[in-house]
Structure formats: C-alpha cells, structure tokens
Image (tube, rainbow, N blue to C red; front, side):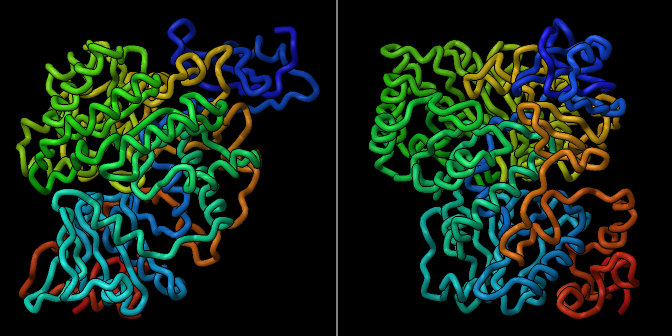
Length: 621
C-alpha cells in the first residue's frame, strides 16, 4: 500500500470472483498487476499525481473474459474480408448487407459470409435461396458458409472455383447438381467439412500488411465484447510456423490486445506423428510470455479421430485404424509432457479415445498434463468419470445454441437435455471451461455463450435444457474467467479481480447480474483493460483506448458494418412481416418475389421505406 498506483477504477460494482473478497468498489493497478481491491477510500490512498483515476459510474466490473476455444489466429487473417451475419436477426437485413457489400467489392475479390450465424436466428427461419443470391450478385463471387454443414455459391463463384458438370464429388462431401448434372451452387458436408473449407481456400487472400491490420481489428472487436484472453485451437489450413508470422509480428511490435495461448493442430493426414515429433523439437509448452505463449497440441491430433458436429447428418463412424493412429501421437505428447486437446462431439468418439488414453496412462501418467476434450455434446456419465480418473478436463462451447434445432430433429428433445451435461461434469470435479469455437460454427460473442449457459435456449428461441442442466449467472461467468485458466496452465495468474493477478478488467454496458435473461446476449464492454491498459472504450470511455488505423482494404465490410450486429430495440416489430409472410414456404397467391426485390433498386433494405418496412416484395404486388 506504500507505492503509487498507475490506475484506479472506482465507484463500481465489482464482481471479483474471489471468494475471500467477492465484491468491491475500487481496484488499483501498478505495472499491469492488480495491487488493491476494496473500498474506494482505501484505494485512493494509492493515488499520486501520475495516477489515472477512472469513475466507472456505478457500472458492473468483471474480470476479463477468457475464451478457451477460438480460432482467433486464422480468423484474424481473414476478418477484414468477411461480411459477418453474426447477430443479424432478419434475412431481409442480411440480404441488404450482402447487396451493399457486392456494390463496393472490386474484382477479383469475393464477398464472403463465413459462418458465425444460423438460419434459426432469422425471423424468416431460413437461408437465402441460390436464386436470391444470384439476383443480388450476378457478377461478383459470393460464398456463404452456414455452420459447417453447407456453403452457398453464386454462379460467379462457381465459375471462379472451376466446379463444372465434370467435377467429381470429393470424399465426404457433395456438390449438389441440377437435372442436367450441373452444379447448382450448394455444397454439402457429408459428413465432414473438407469440401467447404477447401473451396473457401480458393479465394483471394489479403497481403501480409493487410492481414496484420485485419488481425488488429478482430482483436479489437473481441475486446469490445469483453474478451481479453483466448486459447487458440489451431485449424485446418493453419500451418505452423508459416501462418503464425502475422500474430508473432504483432506481438513483437506491441500490438496484441488479446492474450493468446496457442495449440498446434496437425495439418497432414497420415503424417500427424511426424508433425508433432518435429514441433516437439522446436517449441515447448509455456514458451513465450503472458501475451503470447505455446499451449500444447490439438484440437486435431490425428485425422482418423475427428468426428464432426453436423447434426443434419448421421453420426460418422470413425475408421477402425483410429486407435492405432492416435496412440503413438498421445504417447509422444505424454513423454514430452505436452498438454493436448482433442475435438470430440460424440460419446462414441470419447469412449474410443479414452481407451487409448488409459493405455498410454498405464505407462506414462497423463495426470498433471492439463489435457482435455473439446465439445463433448453427448458424453455419458461413465466417460465423465473416466476423464476425472485420468485428471483430464472438458471445454464446452455454445454450438448447440446454433444447432440445437437440428439435434432435436434427429435425436429428440429428451436426448438434447444433456448436450452437454455441464452440471454433471462439475459435480464430478473435473475442470470445465467455456468458449465459442468461433469463427465458423458459432459466433465469437461470449455473451451469446453466457446466455446459452444460463437460459438453456438456442438463438432461435428453442428451450433445450431443464433447470438441472443450466447454470446460475455467477457459475456461468466463472466458466468464462477463473475456470478457463486451467486450460492454459495459468491458474492464479488471471481470471479474478484479485491482488497479484493480471489487471484484465471489463466495465459492462449493462449489469449482467440484473438484466433480463433475454438481454444477456446484448451486453458489450464500455471499457476493456488488458494489464491495466485500455484496449477498448465506448461512450464516456471512448477516448481512453488508442484509435485503430482504418480497416484495410478500403472496401472491407468492417468499415461499413463492423462485426457482431446488435439487436435493435424494435427488431421484433421491424421483422414481424418478414416472419409472418411464411418465406420458408411456397405461396401460390403472392409468389414471394424476394429475389427480384433484393436484386432491384426497390429499397427493401431501407427499414424506414415502404417496401423495407413490409419486409418483402410480395406485400406490395
């Protein structure tokens, strides 16, 4: 208490998540670390002439949010090229955004909507048709990825990627064709997404300087939502070290605004052991610093162990060779004391993987490695207990908020009540953390995840979970903060507002503990601090964070639309006509000429105009 603080926040409702000191009015920071949490009068004793003092106006203050599973490195390289439909609640609005972006996108660039949304979030409860997309963009390539189940390509995109009548279907994917055998523009994952991300990879890439700018904008976007740390789960077409050069440059330049712990994801089917054997000679878990550090292996360890989360198709059976492929990789990782994570949607996958883990554990103990499964939507009690016995954990994501309707259609509402059984995991005493799995199968918005954990509802409004499998607000917040530090081997370093921890703090736009359940998903940050340094500010705090350079290139969708789209106060009324007109069904009376309307100069996207207010052209003709 004798030294001067660099920063003091006061007049706040601080949720510390420190059980010995659960609430406070003020927090003091020195050299990026919290040095005092408690009453305002005591905090002010640390104020000096150079201390920055911020009155948060009675707002709720929480520890910085930690996403235990996101693809921020890959997502950052592409963020400035992507039109995000995250948060959009009407297909009418989404198509207006698409039309406006087509108008400013130069050749040979594409307009890309790359996941982060579900058709169920739209008032119309459907995706656009290929006719509608082609009407809006006859010449500019358009690629729309819906979760990891399908992609919609307009005719211009089909020409660019070269899919023709003679193009064969790839393994585990399907090119939908018309009666003459020509591709329609619909690509379907059957059952995995290789065809979808291989097609996306054919598009133009940003040059390195633009990728740096793009990554900075993506980090600032998650800062806007209160995220200060991310565990990056690697990804397909994300090679190490080549595709990590941008994030490493930003780190060296002092331009990271998110703490990143990165896992390494094998890129070579049938050569996975060689990948990890090579990496184990060049990088060590924990190598780096508090801003950028290596975190181990996964989420892909071997390709034969990968199941996929497309609930519109039957569960894929893993090949018989899976155990033989997985064992030497896990053994190598255990011998080198590398933490690891494994993608596993289904209990059947988890059972077979645990057989391998238990075999390795009998020779090389896994306890203490901070290894874990990702996802685990259908895990059984027996396998939860097996994980506990081996000292493992489970990282859960809000994929069911986007796909719950599909799961219920296939497996029934009763089966969906435990997808995943989070309460049972916690009762077993295993580490459980939360994340998003963004940017493709779900949005990066942590408040959608927190809403899902608390309410048990999908974005489409379907109630999935009984009260016994929901969390109260504090427990849900712990999964997004303190609990997630186990997954990056950093317990005690961050995740709480506590003396000695990193000063990652978020001042909220609305009080998470008192807003309605439905409003949790609308919360943002008005001030985000990383190590006591402002990295985002809004409203009265706007001038505290340094400005970013404009999004590059100048046609970037980020310049016009930003990222996650907020719900408007009048959204329910605004889109009522669009929902009521039954867009998902044919109508012999009106014809529902959406394609013609969206492709014409009629101002359907103008919500103040006649056609926009009514939602679609069929109401006018």
